[in-house]
Image 1 (cartoon, protein in one colour):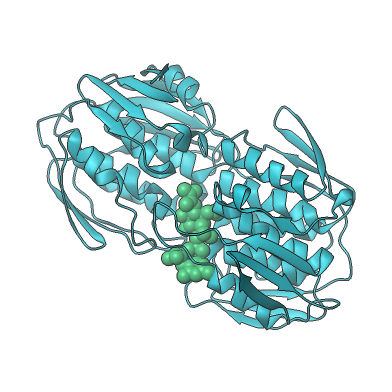
Image 2 (cartoon, rainbow, N blue to C red):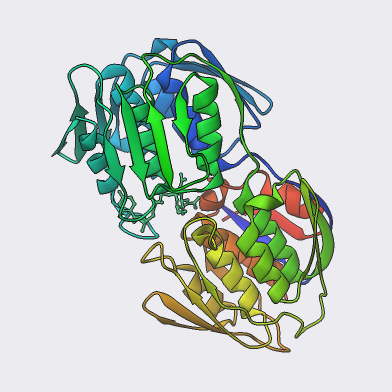
Length: 423
Ligand code: EPU
């Protein structure tokens, strides 16, 4: 297994280019199951998770090829309807094949994802939604066995909590259902807008993009189309926070600052200077001690502060000049990074879903041996390592490789001293 080594304390100066969004690529790749023919997807990041979903598509009968960041996926060969535990257990977003399989084949047998490091993460909203469209969902031997005779029938679906992949699954299923489907309290993340654009290019009729009420007028068939994955807002946000924590003056290129409204506001409040361009961010932070102001954060569905940037912001707050309160409202167990940050000298107290972070004022975090527990927790440790004094060794970096493309090269390009070593 490989570990990541960081020699901390170097400011980040230069330019970094943002890749396509993991959480947009996954549903768009799943959507190629909806229509025969060759779909062309541009700006697809090459990540552990995108490779996993492509393996899953192969196991369902599809073929694909990659040329640089462009993927060509032929949806014609679809003939199997079962997603095995082996694939789903490594990536819970595999449940995104449920909607397309039901729409195309009338059957989907997909392993239940089970819990993961950040919480229980059930899929009851997805199943309840399919049932509203006439699907029978049975749970047997750890699998969801969903089936319907003929086409799904449009219906009304209300989510108690806006679910990102739940909304995406329902959009894909409803696109080929008979009649109209209304999704109420739908999630509004930009990745959903990206999926709606792809489905529309394939011939789907969807109203309400960007709002929490989506109306899908089902069509009889969809055709293959060409789409582009939006830039990864979480990757861009991670680099912005890293520059804030380590200090420096850098340009984050190829991103969409409009997708980061809450983070940019929080960074400004923390005293970090941000220049916003149409497709870039310039982040300027003093590497001097005691210059980061404490800022409270509560995670919320989009356009609120993203849970996927909570761990990274906590690393920044650990270096601040006072007390900040971080409230995680989306996932019940997303504080796994806290114990590792504490090993680096951070002062953090947890009370349920609230973390109280006492900044180190004029002291610095100290490099240490730490362990990555999930994707975003890993990037928070990277940020802490960049800001810390001395050497940090982060083990289990396969988590990081699930969602950050070429992180070592990108950070090296900004002047960080970071490399991989065998454990
Ligand atoms: N929920 C339920 N039942 C469901 C679905 C969701 O109770 O059937 C709850 C969840 O437990 C959670 C809340 O609803 O409390 C919202 O979860 P959501 O369904 O929106 O999460 P998700 O679709 O499984 C996606 C991202 C996550 C991101 C969340 C929240 C993808 C592939 N994954 O997950 O990304 O944290 O939305 O924004 O889009 C990551 O990239 O590191 C990551 C975990």
